[in-house]
Length: 363
Image (cartoon, rainbow, N blue to C red; front, side, top):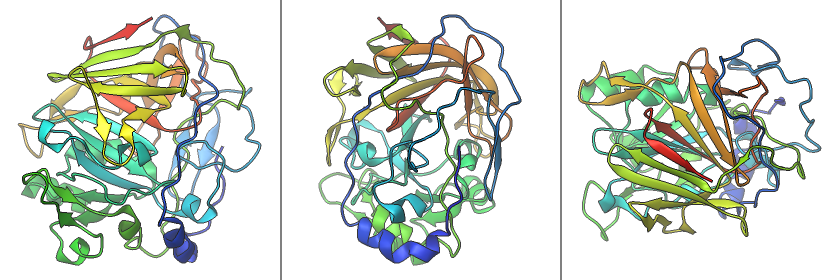
C-alpha cells in the first residue's frame, strides 16, 4: 500500500513552485463496504512499512492494487510529484463562531474535529494542496500529540499554548512551527488580519511553512484504505449525519450531484473564504472517550489509542464497524461488522472525534 519516497529536501524547489497554486479537489466515484451491527476489532494482517513507523492493517486479501501512484493522504492519482513528496503539515484552525468563515479547510487532505474547552477546534492536515492564507490559527492540545503521530514527524503549525502543553509538544516528534517562536513567525508567513478581532485573526501560509521543513523530511504514509475507481458503494443508504459536538450542532449531508458531503454549523452552511461551503468526500465518526488532559485538567483529551465504534459515510452510504489503533505511531484501522477492511472514496476525509450517543444518521 505504501511506496518508497525520496526525501522532501531533494525536491523542495519544485514543491515551492507547485505551491503557488492550489490543486482542485476531485469528485468521488466510489464508496465503502457493508455493516449494520457492532463487532469486536480484528488484528493482524498486512503490514505497511515506512522509514518512520510500521502500521498493522486488518487482513484484506482482495485489496485492489492502485493503477498509478497516489497521494498518501487522499488516494487520488498524483498530478504533482513534488507535492506528493513533501511532509504532512498540520494546522490548528479555530472554530469559534468569531473565527468563521475560515480559510483552507477545503484544501486540507484530512481534517480532524476535536472537542476542546469551548465547542471544537480543527487539526487540518495538508500535503497534496496549499492554502495561502490558512487560518485563523489557534493553540494546540496534548490530544494532538496522541492523534497525529502516524503522519511521520509532521510539521505542526499553531499559535502556542500554556507552559505544560508547550513542553509536551516541544518534546514530541513534531516539527514545532509555533507562532511564539520568532524564527518561525516570519518564515511561515504569520500575520494578523484586521477584519476580525484577536485571537481569531492569526493566519499563515502553507507554502511558506513547507520551506521550514528539516533536511530529509519525508511524506507521510497512507492513512486509509481506498476503493478502486468505479467500485459501487455497498453500505446502507444514508444521506448524512448530525452531531452534537459539545454544544455545536454539526451537520453533513450528501450531495449526489457533486459526490460531496456539505457541512452546516448550527443549522447554517459552514463556509470557507477560499472555496465556499465546507465539503469532503468522506466523513468518519470515531466514537471516543474524552478524559482531562494531564497538562491542563480543564482541557478534554480524546482517547484515540485502543478501539471503539466507527461510522463511515461515503458515496451516500454508511458503514458501521470498529476502529482500532495500537499506539500513537499507528494509523487508524477500520473494519466493518463482518471483519472486512472499510474502504473510503479517494479524496478528502473529515474525521469527527465524537462522544458516544451524540450523533444521528439520516437515511
